[in-house]
Length: 399
Image (cartoon, rainbow, N blue to C red):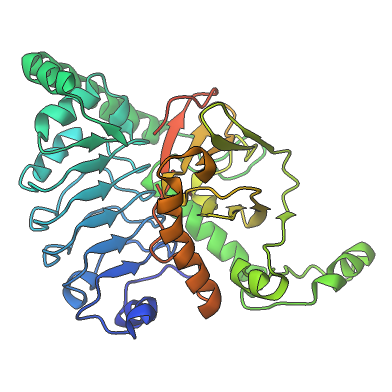
């Protein structure tokens, strides 16, 4: 899988739902392509209203100044450290920066001119751990109605205004200290562990290096992503040890068409836990591994099933009851590395049925056209937390 650039060919391919036309295209999904730079989309698709760029390797927000009609931008799970380049997107209403590396919280000042911006997600970024983070954002961007999926209250606005000088001073000090410490750790970080295995830092450079090495490993192994085989033969071949070929399962859409349902699998043999909490959420807790890079994790949540890829091994599960993908939350434990998914059940949510109906229409449409189930898919909100994985609010993912 090569590092991808945004080309006109790619844009037209991802605009198949609009007959490949770009001039009047209003929505496009460009996630999980290992894109490193935002280019071309701002000039070729000037009428975009929704742009999905999550789960890539983007380090800078750029070349979007022509998208004056853009209302929703999803940049979750990328490698961005500072927010900029959106001043001209005058109709922007929602910005998802979940799980990036945003450390420069002062950079949100560039969003002051985005008067329609009402929904901002910064959870999972270093800046979200600064003291006074929430009140600083509220005081800086009074146009916001929600921050990290939580409604901004009147009391929070009053407190932010009354304590502004103190909040700003303490936050700047914390930010400067964090950046200084991060640079120091980066300079002194070991490159290999005691076993001689390469270590990847939890930073943009580390994500890029991990993606590059993984791609080279796949290429050296001669893995063919397009190859499919008769699944009934896999066990026999593996038992006698006559092959090392990596096999590919049918995509969920083809399984639904062929078998009438998604076939479950657990290639990583993870001892996962699945249960329903008291709030009416389906909880899935997967021991992804303490040292597993987030760059090697991908999540696709659909109303009737979930597909989780961890280091190219798949966990695919069906749900007994439908969930709401756009409300799903993904978290990783900083202590154990466990991946916790919180999936709101439709039957437990007042507005769930109405919301799900729209998402299921899209799923059924994709099944009929054999298209990947990613169009118009909302991102999961991701938050990195402690071992208890409690308090949250990955949008649309994860990686």
